[in-house]
Image (cartoon, rainbow, N blue to C red):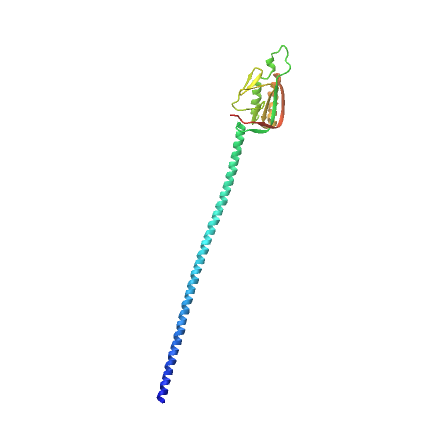
Length: 230
């Protein structure tokens, strides 16, 4: 019996020791696995953190590029606006010049001066001394241009830089078209300056009257003239 009891004691001691070793081994293994899991989670968190930092850097860089592009667009819009103003001004100037040269119609305030043959001709006088000649018309045209006239027309026909006014008997030919008296000369421009220029003492009007030409002078708020044809 004593021998059997001793064997039981030894067996119990062996089983206890074995169980203790298993328990310690289990706890150690569990601890190792826990550390590994923790390391993996840390590495994963670090990876995502780096990705977030990289994303924020890229976002900041893109925002800087966007701001730069916006500044370029604003500058471009300003330049385009200036170009539009410049082009608009150039077009307006070109249109104005075309109107002055006769390529386009023109209208504006101005004056008119009517030249008529004198109705009273003494029997002993030469009738040619009492009618309107081309030199009378040309005298008025020259004075109007000197006073700043922008455009001139005679009996509705516009005069250009290369126009010819020629006296043919009792009529005047303007670029091949004949007109009898009276001759209505219209001029677009500064009304006061042109009128005062014609009415100067010993000026054009006085000269015409002294040469027996009937003269009528006045203002018109709107005078229209067509463009050159052909």
